[in-house]
Length: 460
Figure 1 (tube, rainbow, N blue to C red):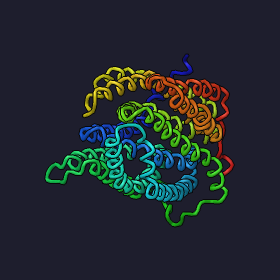
Figure 2 (spheres, rainbow, N blue to C red; figure 1 turned 120 degrees about the horizontal axis):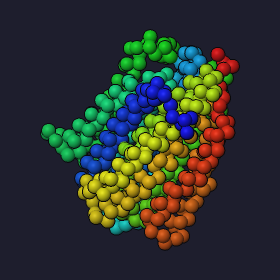
Figure 3 (tube, rainbow, N blue to C red; figure 1 turned 60 degrees about the vertical axis):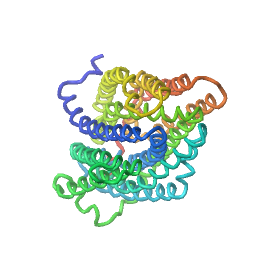
């Protein structure tokens, strides 16, 4: 039992890394939470239209995350080894990858965005579906402007975190949240003489907030070059050493493909849920909104374990890395038990904040409780994934994550939705309970220690 409990100094270091990430994610999700409630005041159709588009944007967000993650593994280990040039090279790689992902995303959403929205509108009154489509189309036309600043923020912020600097991204996120929140109030409802823009106003506020966040991160990073050694000369060229680029692609491609398949899988799962009716679309949106707000604890712990373990692996401190992983995972699960209880307590109150039907509210409350019961298991999975990934075992994490989703979870949900008459809440519970299988596999992989490797030692 003692191997899962750390010293005060250990938890101090962990929290110094995790809390800023936690606060940043919490604030960002809190804005999404308020965004959702504000748009929800406009009615079920505007709320559902925005939720559908955000599913598409979610795919893009995870593509960016996956595309930068391969370089991030090397960046954390380079920093742990004291190689600032290596960190700079990974930063350049991220810029190139970010440009490619942004270009592909814009091309897809500009040419096929409307068709993708309609995939989610298959069951309901024709008038409701058409109104939802029009609101989604309006929101998409504006939110596309956030794609480039979002990529830039992720390139800079991820590199800062890999060098142990989590405070600045958090502060930039706080400023963005304030801007977003104020912009929502003014632009959605037409306050202080501004036009009442509805869903387009919500998108415009998000874009403005993202641009300001981007400016803060860039200006601070370049102004503190002595502190951020990787940025010195970073733009003299975008050249990345061929061997390093090859190894990042080799390690990172499974992560990019994993995030692409996983996010596409989540979008497909939500489309399967939507087959059961327009009410389910609205209820899952409400449930996921509060779930995203409460899962910031284990999300931050996953980022922290990746940074701490990655730096220790880069310094070839394998026993210390294994000990760190065990303690962070245990702490994450314990913290998530507390947040799960809080979710259960508010599950009957939160859906009442929306201007929607009683049926939607009741279903959303039940989904929130189901999510809460399963959240500690999700915390373990998330930390296990990032621990294994920190050692460069990206093929294994690909099979562990997307391989399981596409071979087990997605066929299961497709079959049970289309070919059985089970109630939607039973379907929802069974689908998410499948992750217990994945958790058992993750425990075995962690115990075997196959992730304990230094992937940058020969370069330094």
